[in-house]
Image (cartoon, rainbow, N blue to C red; front, side, top):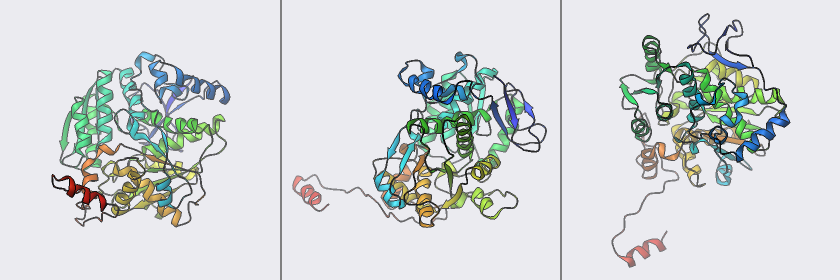
Length: 434
């Protein structure tokens, strides 16, 4: 099977070997994408094969990424594959969230059920496997949280040495704790995400360290399996819309690529429309898609949803292409809208990190504007586990959540704990009043 790294820029399309350690096109500087010939098996056989693998005890079959390995054919030897049984994340019905958004029905694809609690695991299993295949013993990433936790875990599983660079004082302790526990060397840099990424790009080349941010095309290959699994779970019936948060925009790039491949292979009959939701204080892609012209980064992004606090998303050219191909939309939401949507998701019995809740907040606006209809079939992606940022949850429910501009957010759906005396009769009275 023929495979290559190909420049994403239409005017270039230069090809490179998949064993080269590159992240951008050396000729024009464009993003790279991993491209391979489609599987030789037809759609019906693939569907049956992938479903049969669910009953297998082989590690690569138990993985919700490598179960679909025919569409990521870059690894000839299973011994190179690093897996923690990632994927296998559920579709969860959420009637209360649907009502809040103005929809008849809403389903969440909850990536927080992954081994390290976020969607990053789907991509990191491919990235870490590629590092091992290339013989790169050291790996690095810049992260506001989830990427660092995921890379540290997969590096540990692969026997690699991980280096994590994070903005000083700008990471959830729930996420930082994971990276520390998995043994990563953690460097807190006094700069923002985008500035650190530029720095680490230089360091990686200088020191021979393999970079595992979403600019790595093999990360995208792993993340595209999220939509393969989603459609498999839906018996290959595509929804009208797939809604996801927008930070570095690797996920929308991966989802769009995966959906187009599925459609070309005859696995699905139509392309779902993609909706990307950004935080208002960190929304350069929204501004670009609204106003056009040159893409302008935001040098000082601000949002409490740290997983999407990125002002210069590297994958924006791919994301634009996928939004256009799917006739999708881009929306932005405020800190208050994110916080309230997160509380509503919680009342469905479903916990998520703040960035995840941007999907519900964005859907509420899109339905109100008529872009999404009440009867549309919608799947919204929750990117991370509720325990990724427990301080945020506590501060919201106790009326202490402060926005980046120092204003206090309303606890619209707050659930404050009640202090009671050590007295059964008094406690009974309190309970009666609830």
